Structures are given as C-alpha cells and as structure tokens.
Image 1 (spheres, helix red, strand yellow):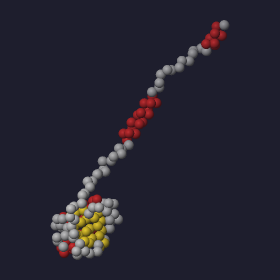
Image 2 (cartoon, rainbow, N blue to C red):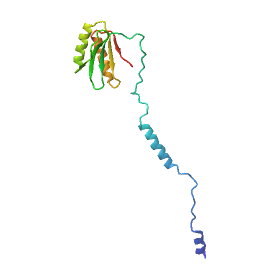
Image 3 (spheres, rainbow, N blue to C red):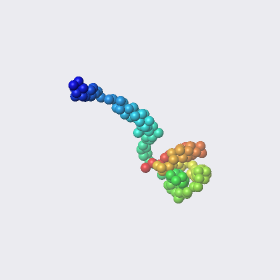
Image 4 (spheres, rainbow, N blue to C red):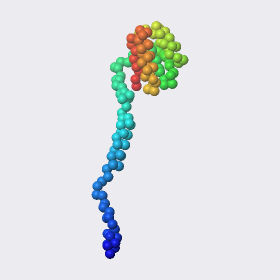
Length: 144
C-alpha cells in the first residue's frame, strides 16, 4: 500500500518558478548598446553650414567673369561696356594666361568668379588665391 500512495503523489512534485529570467533581457540590452556605440551619429561634423551672402547695393557694371562648371569646364569673358563672349578654356593655365591679359587690358575691372554649386570648392579657392597673387585686389564671388 505504501507503493500506491507514493505513486499517487507522483514522487517529487514539480515546483514552478515564480521569478523572471532577466538574462535574455540583459543580452538584448548589451547588443543594443554595442549597436548605438558603433553606428555614427546622423549629424556628421564634416557638414559645414555656410553663411548666406546678401546682395551688395550696387554691383559692378563692368567686370571680368570666370565661370567654373562641375564638369571641370572653365570659361572667361568680360561683362559690361566692352563685353566679350565667354571663351572656354582647356585647362587652368590657359585660363590664368587669359585672366592676366584681360586684367592688363582692363586693370580697373574687378574679377567675379561664378562657381557652380556642384563645382569643387577647392577649385574656387585656388582661383581666388591665384588672382590675388597676380595683383588683382577686387575678386568676388557671384551669387544667386
């Protein structure tokens, strides 16, 4: 009879755990922490917010215009009373020679550089620097 009563009880009874297993939650939190540490932030420090330029009260009537296009095409021309059609230049050295001769012909004319928004910023800065080295004091940027 003793064997019958032990089989009725089922031997050791199963006890249910009433605790929450937090190990999977800790694993998920560590994975999320690693992901947030590795993924770069959305605002990149390489993006520069450039200031906007206001139009001057009186833009010059006569000027030498240099145009930089995004496909590395360069052109130069004189705008104003003695205007000439813009000439396409094959490279930077030819453009600088033409700029030097135009500045010698019209020393009072300022130089306006019209760089396309998709043109390299370094090309515009290099052109401004080379114009200043030639002795051209009035160099400006054409804006919309």
